[in-house]
Image 1 (cartoon, helix red, strand yellow):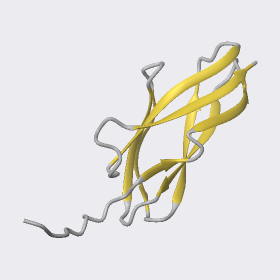
Image 2 (tube, rainbow, N blue to C red):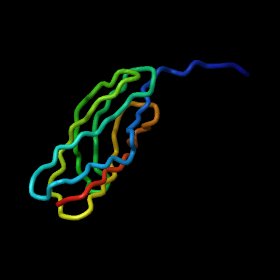
Image 3 (cartoon, rainbow, N blue to C red):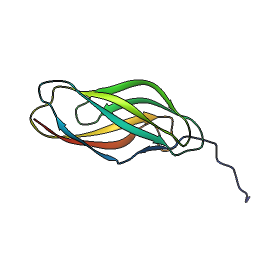
Image 4 (cartoon, rainbow, N blue to C red):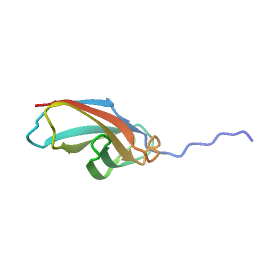
Length: 113
């Protein structure tokens, strides 16, 4: 059997750049930072969580709908940082075609003073 099947419309997650430089962060207070997610797909995409892979923390949880072809900022708060280089791998969870339940990986970097 040969044929063509039209794919189901779905969102497609993008975090650009995938390595996000947060700049200088403070060791003595909570740091509010923003992570920009984009939907490169052809249907709305629901983002449900941003979790730290390195520190086993949930930075954000909720439900954010990103329309097809648009982007949105997710505000996260980083706390308990120690002076020095900051590096964390985060997983952004959504119902996007390229997130099969394991999250979309992005890297956060910065310097904590």
